[in-house]
Length: 144
Ligand SMILES: [Zn+2]
Image 1 (cartoon, rainbow, N blue to C red):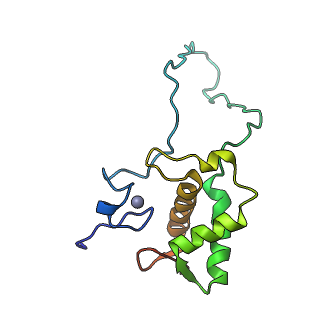
Image 2 (spheres, rainbow, N blue to C red):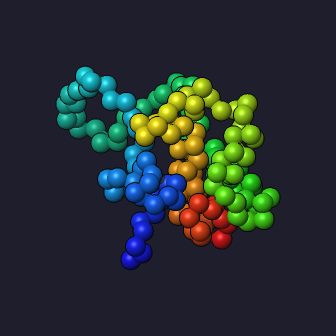
């Protein structure tokens, strides 16, 4: 056990970061709940229980998903020789994506963080669990 618990998202000691408390499971995306959930009763039919596919008619994205950041993060780190300060990576991402980020990306999460930055941190977590990035010094994003 290390004496300091570092936040998985931003690598700050949890006592200093906006995500840290309470020790949450992999943070669910903040979803706006409609206050009046529509309850649809499904009568039990004899048909197969395959769930009906929810067909969304190509809804326009409100913000950029983490998956969009992942390849860029890897590229940036590669060009930087394998590791880079998290803040520098984020700055670089912002530069490269300046004309692609959506208005919603500049909204803030409930924690007060820009959404695209949060998404980028989430992307890093995915890369970490895929073994495409590695945890090194806190605050530094690093290739394995
Ligand atoms: Zn954090």
